[in-house]
Image (cartoon, rainbow, N blue to C red; front, side, top):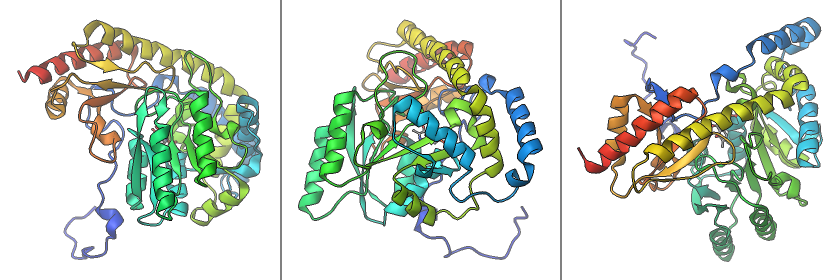
Length: 400
Ligand SMILES: Cc1ncc(COP(=O)(O)O)c(C=O)c1O
């Protein structure tokens, strides 16, 4: 881009553009990256995806390469509806799906369709930093409920809902990642899921169930999804192929009552999201989904175990961390007095990346914690990086 331009954009940008941009994944060139929730690159099914693309072009090329259906490729929606009926017992059909450009786009559409500046929304905290960004961009009033070892504090949730009602207001939604939460890795048990849904219905506030990681369970008892427990149409669910196939495909979806899908489509301007890639994904998943997910569970379990084992061996006194039963992340509380800034500096020197806890809170908390993604580095890198991180925590704590 030529930079000796005379045209000026000054005064054109709206308030949204004044917000800080979300950083790219794995930015900063760290050698061992525990910061971004990036999938394992060795697990991508390169040959099978190439074969799926070849078949799509041979059999369906003209449709695949043109604008597509506004709601997304019907073949993919049929396949997904069948998956959710089979795996979760959800009462859904293809019309309950809207295909999006990854589930980040799904959330963006949901927020844009529902939230006017100043509207209250409720989220667990800490939470996925992309969600915090989406809420800020739309200038929502962000109300938080604390995350506990078994998911969000539903008493705090009820307090918010009751107070808003007393003010004659209603939250636009409750956002939660109930299974293998990002960033903390915990999973909400059944009783709490039921209570959350009871509150949602009692206060007329929909629940956004963000379920990017639910298929990746390494151990423990699967919990029914909020979508499957819901009998009132109060749950809007988001899903993605990013963590079970490939993030670069940029395929995600919203599952919602048909009326709500219609509203989300009014803020979506493209001519059907990724018609070609949707077909490639459907072609691949039709044949390989279950086997590939089973393989991924093995891959990520080994990685989690490598991180947990190394932390157990090397973590300094005063560190605590979660033990996720699935997903990509664990959350680590640092020994009191550890400087997050100092830790970042030492880790930058050692080539180890992590996500500061502050990035996962909308309100400045999180200075005592970090998020560690074990998904991207190899097992050997995880062992080395975790050991270096532990040394860095020791150094950041002593100020040496
Ligand atoms: C909880 C959660 N939701 C949504 C997303 C967005 O994923 P994508 O847009 O790749 O589907 C992520 C990605 O890291 C995530 O962790």
